[in-house]
Image 1 (tube, rainbow, N blue to C red):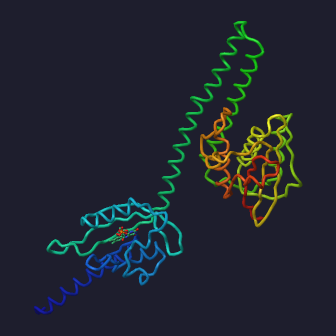
Image 2: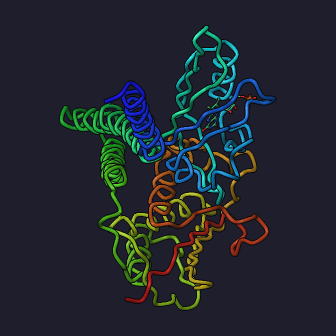
Image 3: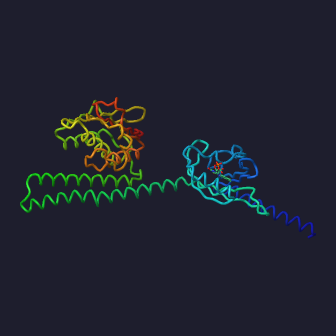
Length: 366
Ligand SMILES: Cc1cc2nc3c(=O)[nH]c(=O)nc-3n(C[C@H](O)[C@H](O)[C@H](O)COP(=O)(O)O)c2cc1C
C-alpha cells in the first residue's frame, strides 16, 4: 500500500475508535453530561441518552442551561455547596442529592463531577456522571427505621417490661412473707397487666417493622371494627362505647394489624375520656373511594401544644404511664395501608373531646 493509503487506513481506524468511544458514552446505562466552564453560568453542552431517561427531559430542553434546574424545594443545600466549591477549586466531587424529573417527581441522584484538563493543564470543561439511586436510598431509609425500631423494642423489653415484672415480684414477695395485703395484690395484678400490654405493643411494633406489604389483602372492615369495639367494651364495663349509625360494608387492603389500629384508638379514647363517665363513639362512612372511620371521646381534647407531637414515637404527653407507642404504631400501620390518621379540628368533634380520623382507600372490588 502507498504511504497515503496507510495514512487513510490509519485515519479510518482512528475514526472508528472515536466512534466506538462516543457510542459507549451515548449508550452508557447512566447519565453523562458535559458542562462548558468558559461560558457564562457553566451551561450543559452535551447530555447522553441515559441522562434524558433519568430526567425525562429531551436534550434540546437541557442544553445551554446550568444543571441546577434539576434541583427543587427538597434539595439539600449541603451537597449543592460541595459541588459549587469543588468546581471553584477545579476538583472532583461526588454527592447524593434530591433532583426532580420533568414530571415533577423527585428522585435521589448520585452525581460525580470531574474536571477535564486540556494538554496545558487548563480546566475548560466538567464531566458529570449521574445515577438514579432512589431504590438504594429507600432501602437505606427502611434499614435505618428498622434499626431505630429494634432499639425501641430492646428498650421496652429490657427496661419497661422488666420494671413492671419487678414491681409485681416485690409485691408477691411481701405477700409470701405474710406482710402484704390487698393493696399488694392489686399492685401485682396491675403491673402484670401493664407488662402484658407492653408485650402486645412489642409484638405489633415487630410486625410493623417487618411488614413488607406483600401480605396486604382485602379485609372486610366492618367485622374488624365491631369486634374491636366488643373487645374494648369487655375490658371497660363502666365506659360507654357506641357505634354511630351503620358501619358500611367495605373492604380495605390491610393485614392482621388492622384491628390493632382501632384497638389502640379506642383504648386511647377511653383513657382520655371524661374520667367519671368515659364515653367513646365510633362511626364510619364511605366517600370518594375512601372509608373514613372516626373515634370520638368526651374528654378534654388534645391541648394545642401536644397536637404536633401526638404521633411521635415515645411521646406520652400526660404522665399516664403509657409507652407513647400506641399512636405511633397506629400511624405507621395506617400509612403502610396507603391511608392517613389525623386529629380532627376541635370544633368538628362529636362528643366534645378528641376526635381521631382514619382514612383508608377502599380495596378494588375483585
Ligand atoms: C457537568 C455537571 C453536571 C451536573 N449535574 C448535576 C445534576 O445532575 N444535578 C444537580 O443537582 N446538579 C448538577 N450539577 C451542579 C450544578 O450545575 C451547579 O454546579 C451546582 O448547583 C452548584 O452551583 P450553584 O450553587 O451556582 O447552583 C452539575 C454540574 C456540572 C458541572
